[in-house]
Image 1 (spheres, helix red, strand yellow):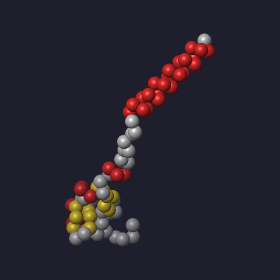
Image 2 (spheres, rainbow, N blue to C red):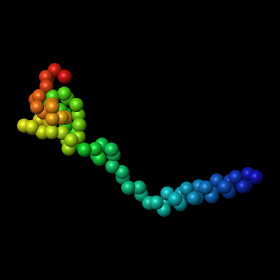
Image 3 (spheres, helix red, strand yellow):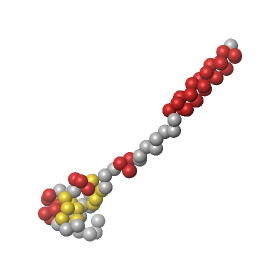
Length: 77
C-alpha cells in the first residue's frame, strides 16, 4: 500500500513539473494600474474621473457640463 502511495506521489509530481516546463516562462502580466486610463480631478467638486470622460477648459478639468459652467469650486476641500 505504501509503495502505491509513493508511486502516485511521484507520478503526480512528474505531471506537475512537466506542465510547468511545457508552459514555459510566464509572460509578465500588466498590473491594473498600468492598464488604467489617466485620471484627472474636477476643478469644481474634486471628484476624480478618467481623463477621456472629463471636460477641459483653460487647463482645468470638470466632471460635468454643469460644473464646467459653474467654474472652479472653493479651494478649502
